[in-house]
Length: 464
Image 1 (cartoon, rainbow, N blue to C red):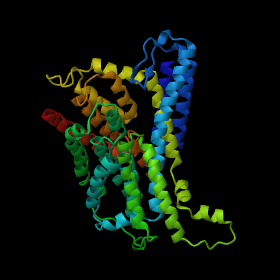
Image 2 (cartoon, rainbow, N blue to C red):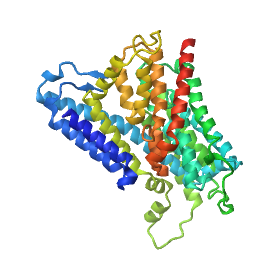
Image 3 (spheres, rainbow, N blue to C red):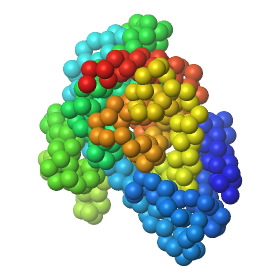
Image 4 (cartoon, one colour):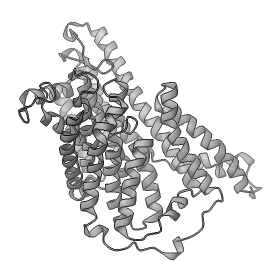
């Protein structure tokens, strides 16, 4: 039965990568393989020999000897756990996307657009790379990607040029998220799981992450795609549609920056703070909207007119729900593999079969090559369950260099494929980037940055 579930995942994964060839939206195979995987688990529950308890990050002892009802109860609890964790990410994402759309409703990004005076592609590339690196550490790589691609859409009119910028934004955002405890889901997991502390995380990973961003950006600046100046239509250069554009930009970004502070103070999940941030931004949006519009259409009812002009309603209608559903499907499908202990077993096999790199055992018997492969694997399979599996697989103490290497590898390795990170998935949805285009044009740059950063990490870990 395990073989069949893996086969379902592989077929579903292939259907996602071949989306543009088979003309089926990627959310459909994602949802189908999620549902079939869990259905097969439920039907073959008694045939499995082990079960991975995600809540405790370890295999359930004596699973094979448990009764059918107990196994069913365990499966339901696991499914609920994964749905809860996935929902946290999705609700957080919905809040962030809505705030970004509200800012856009007031044409807020024209404020940042006005700061960028240059038309030279290489200068714009470096500006966006550094913005992505810094913003992702503060407001997380997912939100930073949404914000920057939204700004990019206002600056670069040609989509064929824009997707090149988007590819480098993904690399820079993932690199920036790796060295901050709130910058990436995986580093947050390690931080909350008491495996890393903020000071050591920054000390170990700031320089490797910076190199991981600088190397691909430097190489890309010599590519033909970034030569010359942008073609700008004069008609596009216009004043903001609203006098509140600057206010809403700073309010929206400030609200997103407030989320990690709220989490630190209250110890509540990030999505709670994001909902509060959305509520505050929405209040000001409604107030400013009343000042912005006069309801001149007397034929329609007042409620209809308000719904038409409400920035919150308008912003919610513009959210990319297909991306949200795709995220749900892919995360829950990977959760099925994790629950059966397949990922745990895969990581254990790697650990046993890989030779040690060098003579010194830096990680008390854990090969550097295993962690590098975990990083490459996070591009193929979502990095969240891989890190979750590593939490249960390794027993090193807090701030051991192993955990920081895992944070770096899982955080930056996902850039090598567009569906290997949340930032990539969102960019793929926002710009309709083709999987194979990214693989041919951007993946090698991400790999170069990943390997360069890895070499720097081998040096920085000797400093502590």
